[in-house]
Image (cartoon, rainbow, N blue to C red):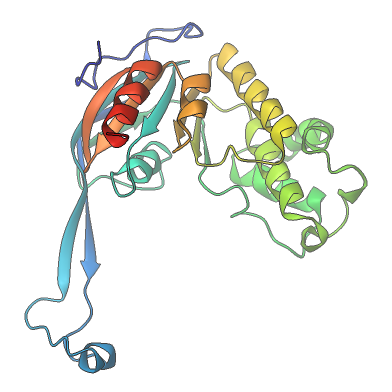
Length: 262
């Protein structure tokens, strides 16, 4: 049965401890958005003369509570605008809640944008060093992982070439390889599993499985429900900033499909 109570985590078979790695306690996130100023040229041309305050508030999350056990794999689903990415950014520590409390234990590695930290004029080697540092690794730790990263990304002799000479697929593979080589305690991924061809995607899935076996907590936001069922033991369905359902991944994704295919 699908439970709407987000605080009841369903343990994965790979969970090695009962302590929560992530605790979201009655969290709300409110964005303050600036509307088009009443006197703007665009408003004048379109005949949209507004009056009053140009600031509107949008509550992306409302009273969300959630606990994720160490070693658990959680998939987050929902339609566009339901609050999925906002929740992921809270867990990744790149966003603070408007209300409530967020606690995350251990090293968090977010894959919110696989290429966001790369510089096109730097070589692949220099980008590995740069991103490894951003993920909190010391230089000696990056050096120790360098060959493994290059092999996983399959960039071979391009390691010392500027990143601008790489194909888009090579850059994405390198981003995934660097992020997962850092051995995170919590790995957070936002729609970043479509990396490379089908063979390389299977390789990425195997890498995530290996991290989970070693106790890493895995949180995935995706519209690909097959990936959610394949990689996650539990799924969370967000709807208009609130938790609609939480439970075994197959059941929650099935309920989501039943409603959206109706």
